Length: 488
RNA sequence: GGUCCUGUGGCCGAGUGGCUAGGCUGAGCUCUGCAAAAGCUCCUACAGCGGUUCGAAUCCGCUCGGGACCUCCA
Image (tube, rainbow, N blue to C red):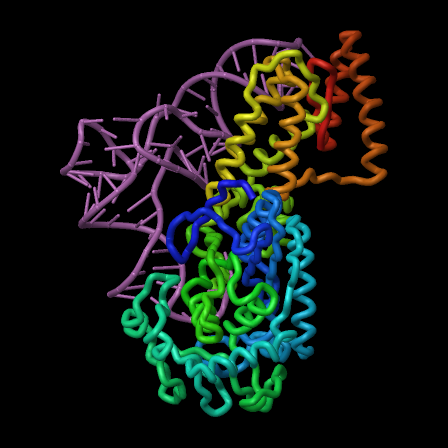
């Protein structure tokens, strides 16, 4: 595998050259959604970022096993390790089965991700499908003396673990500081240490989701599902583990601790974290109530939006920002991206009908090298896009006969476009498609021919009338050197 | 309070110790019957104050903003 891919590893806090444990195979685990309500845009950003990473690794020739879980159990409201989980709460509210909640939002999630043109993961395992595996890990951790049971609940012993391991390594925090800053819990606490977290939680009789276990009826803690499923499908140590930055301090820190307590091995070589989406500078989150639903974005049905934006526009918008930077969301920024994206894709169409010259005035191989350089530098899509706009300029100039491209140049440009725009960034031409558009194409050709005749006869009143009425109908006419073209 | 990130032109957003980011917007020009499209040019920014350096937006310190995590969240 010859490439120069470097990626930022949260563990070392710097960019490192990517070396697969067992090339050409790569194991990648990404923490997926908790399906108790609609996915919001922030989730989508994370999964689009990892989709990009998945696509680029595949493009480089790796055989990637991409595992992304569906969390359909556990997840209590708050830190008390008590009360209803999110599914039970919602199910009671709507008077349905918790699994109906799970089904509804799992399907919704997949539909949205498909609209965003993300590839499905290789395996999409669910927490409820791996209750046994989670119990096995909890048992082993107890055996290894890093966990203890109190009244049917199993807790991980963080202080014990810290004696031989660096618990806060992922966030560079010291145990003393963590202890210092952790809130004192209400008196009835049964945990030994205030940093201890639950591997298995005792269920009250009224709980709708509960399973038998060596410790009585209960349900799994939040973190253990990822330990169980990543180990099962990718092994004790695999290549890349990813998720949103908000998972770094708690979820991933605990996941690493569980894995080490379980088998003595750290789960992943590279930890990758994607940054948050913000709205007016504040993090977009379900609990803050400032989130956008993807469908609101597509329809424009939101107080902060002047109009709707297509899924590909949104994807392009996100690709214009590096995955580790926060991305501030605004109507103005989206509208800028929409225009830029259309210009990029228009040039893609122009490229298909470019005619070759005998000589070349541009260095296309260098452009291609720059594109790889950008992607190899921790998946730097903003820089990649900057290079692609250089290609846009070249293509449009060639179309205007202002620069010359050989057939080899044109073929290479096609390769660059197909590789980087379509395959790697996962953008596609949004077509209305079908027979209707075929017919429209013919009708438009007819109309433009009639207008060309009027122009040839200097009947500008007629040609302008045709153009104006087409514009009013939402069709833009562009007069070029070799006749007119149009688009919606 | 603790840990950490961040502050770039009208807006979004990359980046490196010295050499053009890019996109959107705005202005001008070319082309065009006119317009649109396209191309070219311009608007030359790096929070503030010190320091290191031949040279810093890029390194260090301080100040002032913004944000994240420490509680469920991608």
